[in-house]
Length: 134
Image (cartoon, rainbow, N blue to C red; front, side, top):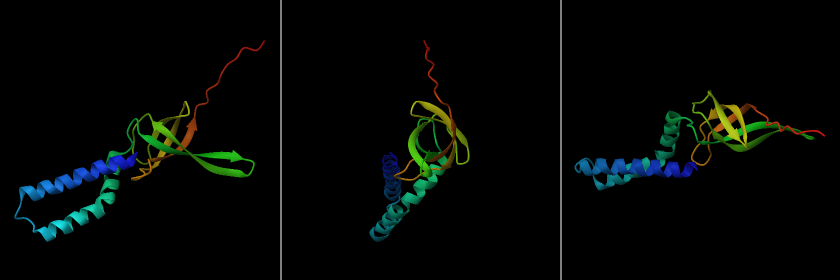
């Protein structure tokens, strides 16, 4: 899911770094190039999280929805995957689709490298099946 996006971002970041080194060969020695490469490698997850904030949640993204579920033992939070039908940023209400239902949810966070964005389910539409009674 997000791990492929992170690796694409990481390869793009390292490629830009190597282009800068190729364009300015007198810019750095081999020792400083190695240190810069290690620094970029360690900082790339944080830079990726900031890039996710700029991007937000787009239409068609997979999101993780949280909803309260009742059981005989009390309330608990149920989490399931859904598809975003609209786009937005943290705090926005977006349309989502899950288990052939449509609903609305508020974006809580953008997730990370391994997890998709999290959305709190506000409400969803029930599908009513009408049958003839004889």
